Image (cartoon, rainbow, N blue to C red; front, side):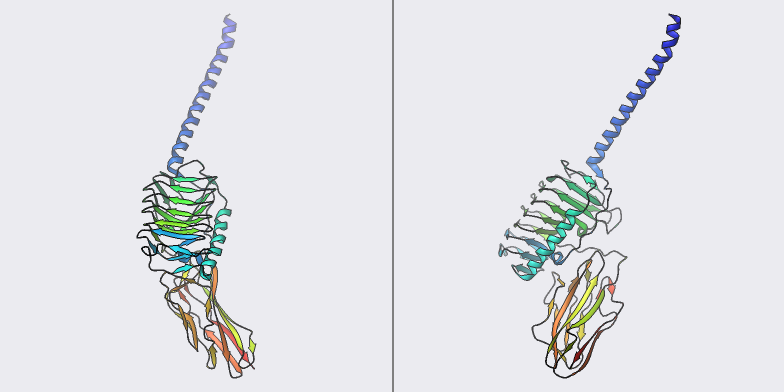
Length: 392
């Protein structure tokens, strides 16, 4: 018995130590799991960065819908309001679009819808490392990144977006179906976060509850409903359905431009480059911007044509973006064509100003815009833009 006891005693102690380690490990795992659960309720870290989508002409719109825009009460839209392909916009007044322009079933609204679709697809295609399906956004603090919901997303209370001191930080939220916020819910930006850089890609429709204070650009496949008193610092862009409003405030944000930015560029062409006297050619001035934010003109751009070369009346066109402060931004007479300081060049893109020109006398017409002529908040063009028209 003594020999048996001496043999089993160490074994029993070893088993006891292993059991204790196992229990301790389980306790440690449960503690870690509990900590992770608490962390998920308060903060989250995305493992892949969100990228700024290529915004097009839709960035001049605070509200854009596909079927109808309806409003009840004294809503205020700061930015353009548009509708395409539908044409029924009701409730303005008492609603106000100030400053801004209403575009109903016109070419500007159609282009904005086309660009909205492109931006929506860009957002939907971004890889999502942080699945928040079945979690309420309320009470969370989220760093920049891509966050997704396989079906619906819910916000009850306050969601805080922490930029960590980076004004170019981007958040992308992807939902399979709907986004719904509870009454008096809010989205808060801290540590340099900007509403221009927050995007909500909604698989069907979004509904903001009563007195919600929301931040970011909502791009919904179907419709957006803003219930009484809801406010957005951003945009409400519905691709196919309606935007429904009730005493709301939708303000297109103005955001800080990152310190590091690239100068815009400018080129010029005549097409065709050779014409007969009395014939016509298309002058195209192209502005390009490689930055993640639009390049806002800070001074007028005026192209004075060489003597004898004139603009055909009514021929000036542009693909550049109009701002809410736009009051007819073409400068055009028989010898000049240009834009005022109310225009902007889209982020990561380009736009053009075109005009049909003609000359009655043969000759070589050199048209030049010097370096520095294009003045924007991202700087001015470093190289001149020149083109030659030959008239025979």
